[in-house]
Image 1 (tube, rainbow, N blue to C red):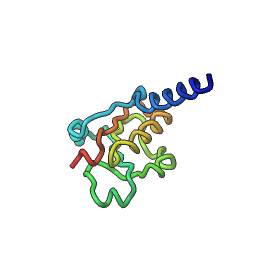
Image 2: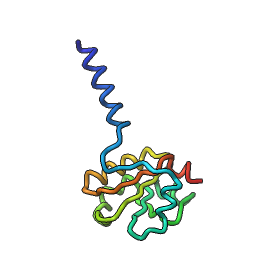
Image 3: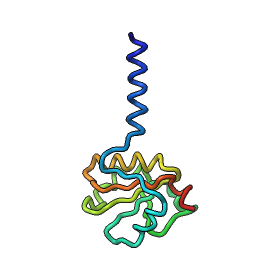
Length: 117
């Protein structure tokens, strides 16, 4: 019985990581690039400053994931937000954090900067 409960909890944990959160949309690099000229969109790169300085793209401003909670009030909740990292893992966490803080239109770039190049 305990084994089944443990298995169910583990499965639920992994399913919760895979199922997208309502209000967060995964987009391709091309879709993100198409939004690049839109002034109503905020672009956030949540990689470390070292990663950002090594390679970045014009519309993205660097707010490392570790600093995002402290900087969240500097962002406009009424604008769309495109979030990117190196592979998509940190940006997924950032997108969920933004959602918890009342942002409604959040886009996570699938594959991150690895796919951007």
